Length: 130
Image 1 (cartoon, rainbow, N blue to C red):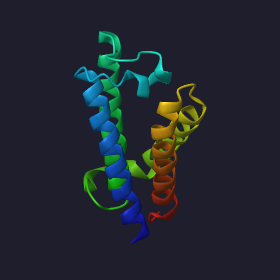
Image 2 (cartoon, rainbow, N blue to C red):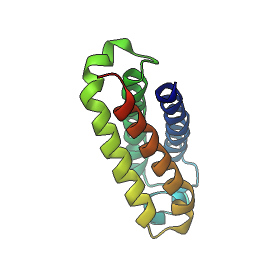
Image 3 (spheres, helix red, strand yellow):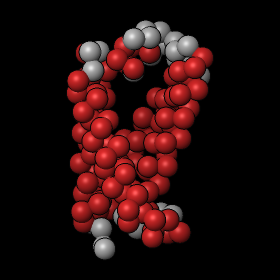
């Protein structure tokens, strides 16, 4: 039950991050909340493409967590045994980078998100059936 809840919470939080990235890609003026606040307002074209790629990565990571927890994507189950650790590493890196960002606005929003994603992915990785 804990694994399922952790996976669903991960999916909910990551889904919010995906929507944020897609909004940045579409031109939302939220650049101050990403990339260390280096691009306040709208992202330049290259970073908009990067935001779409980031959204895709987050969606794939979510798929791995949901598969590992047995919530969705049963065809990914075998691969998710190892890939869930990639999710844990990615989430850990994200948490650290968002904790040390020079942007106070970015840190206030995304550091807790990164820590929560790390905790949820680690719970799934450690508690899922071997």
